[in-house]
Image (cartoon, rainbow, N blue to C red; front, side, top):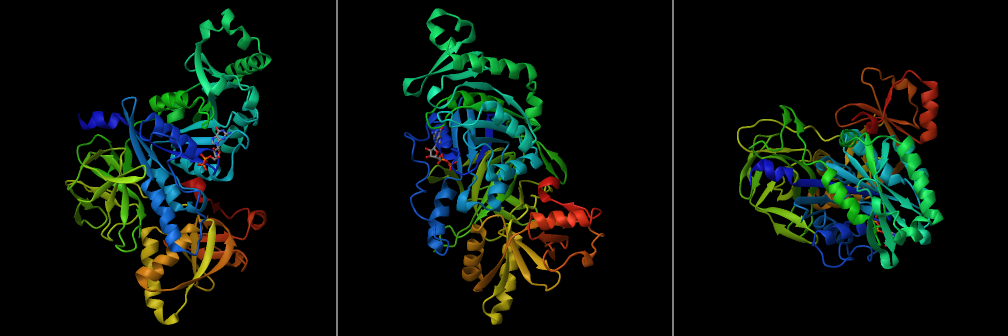
Amino acid sequence: MSIQEEVQKRKTFAIISHPDAGKTTMTEKLLLYGNLIRSAGTVKGKKSGKFATSDWMEIEKQRGISVTSSVMNFPYDGYHVNILDTPGHEDFSEDTYRTLTAVDSVVMIIDSTKGIEAQTLKLFKVCRMRGIPIFTFINKLDREGKEPLELLEEIEQVLDIETYPMNWPAGMGKGFLGIFDRYGNQFVKHNVGDVETYIPNKELDQPEHQDLTSNPTYEAAKDELELVEEAGDQFSLQAVLDGEQTPVFFGSALAPFGVQLFFDTFINMAPTPTPRKSTEGIIQPDSPDFSGFIFKIQANMNPAHRDRIAFIRVCAGKFDRGMSVKLSRTGKVFKLSQSQQMVASTRESIDEAYAGDIIGIYDPNAYQIGDTLLEGNDKFEYDELPQFPPEVFKKVTAKNVLKSKQFRKGIEQLVQEGAIQLFRDKLTDSFILGAVGELQYDVFKYRMQNEYNAEVMFESIGERIPRWLKEGEVDESLFDGGNLLCKDRDGNHLVLFRNEFALNWFKDKNPKVELIDLFEVN
Ligand code: GDP
């Protein structure tokens, strides 16, 4: 098969959701359809063990599981499907955000009883700023949840994206009758035991369906759907691919109900690997030479060997095991002999890969997050990965002042590698770390001690709101000690506001000072 044919088969996506919305349950169902697992309940053996932040081995175990299952792939309907995991809970870190730079589309799962929750919103913002197409699955229709119209309105208002319901539910909870499939011109009827029967629209007026069609719940839903058809947005595949409109599906991942319907539609509509921006212009996914970028580095998966795995999103060409590639940043050439692919709970070696695929390669301590790897004589770098706004900030110091050299070296390297972000307080010049999740601190502390022999101490400065300032306009006198004025790694100024109130108060007082939110600008 040609490179172009291989690329056209790839569908690479992530599932984003707030914890407990049903990501794991959905993933399991998709793996079942893909024949990757035989029964549900085998994806993560995770929720059993309690997470002890002080115990690295626990983290290691925990991470080990989430790493090996961090990419799952299987054939479906003639496609080669890659699902990337986006860890949440205690595992939430910048890696979760960065994973979204490696996918071509995203499935957003919303719990119909809760609507949009905090983590969904954060991940959604990243998709939005990257223009990633978003498909929405509203889950748990088997329970009494919010009204479908209310949920659509919430998505449109909170997320500022057009919605287009691909199907429409009739009832919910105990009174759930099924869904109108607008796309397939049929009604998917819910029967005892969550069995689905498909009734084409033109057969709905036949007498055997009268029980269904005369049900007041059915009639009310039909009226609602007619209203949506008249007043709602028009479907536009282009708007979906541009990330401006989200197709919305309703169902239950657990039952499952409406899941296969969703997946069949999604897999056909979701984009195949798209051209990517680089310093030398647009790179086509079917160009002959291999290239890709590193979006995640997993360190210390095995403390005995201290091995590190770099995850590469293949963006073009063909990857062959044992091939030599050039690290664009340094020009150094590496032979990629230990390549791996992560499938469910096992690691398998991989011999070839194409645009859209994710491979894990052994990292001889040479790579950084965002690095571009190239075959042949090409010379370019893929667009830099964005800096994501941290939320948890801590002052960090060396426990032993005599070890300050190791301390500085360790911080410098870990920050370079992308494990955590570093800021310097303008007033005191102290080191302030910024992360999007606590896990990053656990990993940082452990690695400082084990790789650089530098014990560190943290002093929490709480959850802050970072806002960057426009360079050249920094008037230091405007900032008191409460809202810390800092510099980031690149020397840009930012302010760590104590809270929303302090931020708004500052905005009121200084309307002319432009404050930049990283979620908005990237
Ligand atoms: P995750 O944290 O997003 O991965 O969520 P899980 O898939 O682990 O689901 C969280 C809980 O919600 C579990 O107890 C699931 O059994 C349950 N759940 C998932 N989907 C549904 C659904 O469609 N209906 C109902 N009633 N429960 C569901």
